[in-house]
Image 1 (cartoon, rainbow, N blue to C red):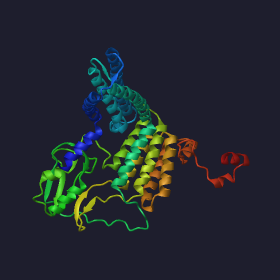
Image 2 (cartoon, rainbow, N blue to C red):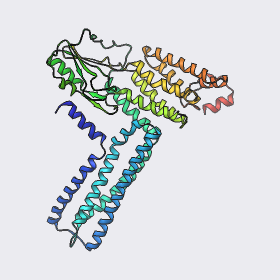
Image 3 (cartoon, helix red, strand yellow):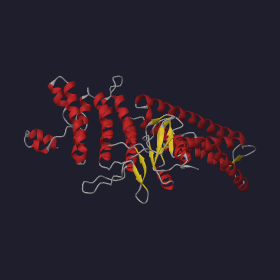
Length: 439
């Protein structure tokens, strides 16, 4: 099994919500069969008429079927509301939730179990299976209440933004594992590719580059004594017939299929190897909140909160050069990676443009940029200072009133209402005011 097939299986399992509930049907039937055998050995029977047992199991099974239908309806409604109110790019998070997968699996398992018990009631009611079905129903009911609570909280913008941010932070620390330190020598830059490629491997299907097998490509290059260049960047759309790989300095006998099987393509971007995608999702949520149809600048401020900390995480790390070497230190793989300018432009530009009419957004954006300038290494500050200048120019053009301009050019971590007062200014304030602020 090659890397691409393993990736597709893992990707399908992670993003499919139906697989485990369907498997639970067979698991429930197997459990009923085993309990039936155990029931025959023990001979335990309930002191209950078969008619009463059938009514009880029928009620449990009917209730569980209704519960399954309601849960699926709530899930579809959540997907629709999330895509309309926030962004369609978070639908994947709804389907990947372990809570929802486990809940639906438990619901379908208990329903199948109850139905299997119902058809086995003949002249007597089996004690073991009846008790298992009854207590399983109670546990499933409790799980359903938790499922509803979780589903309701998922639709909140703050919960969604935090989930995307946490996933993005994990990807950032995986792709860029080395923290930036001014006192340490930066990683050695590997030589650049020069010359004409010996071979060009073309792509055979349309799709977005989701991930690639870094270790596998380095191994191929080392085995065939060549240098491989992956042309598209993770997150790029590539059409059939576009260059996928360039091979330098040998590798004439390297199979093209071995290279193609090292890159996964799909319908839309994922977060697995794409740290930029987390910014893309959060910026999309902020942009939709700032649209005239929605007009919700507070949600945009919540988005800037997450962008703020993601940018700090990226800016405090050495960004990958897109060069991988073998054990002897020889260059084997080259690939494109986003740089600091890419991250800043994506994180700031659209929010600044769409939020230029909102003093709340302008103040929160200014607080973010000033804080990043203060806390990030020196080499990151030039671009942030440029963005701060553009923010000031935007405020000047948008607000003709000088008072509004002054208000928009104040840093505020809350957008409006969280202005930071320097402690040194309290000494010059009136005693009553100073006392009220300190208390």
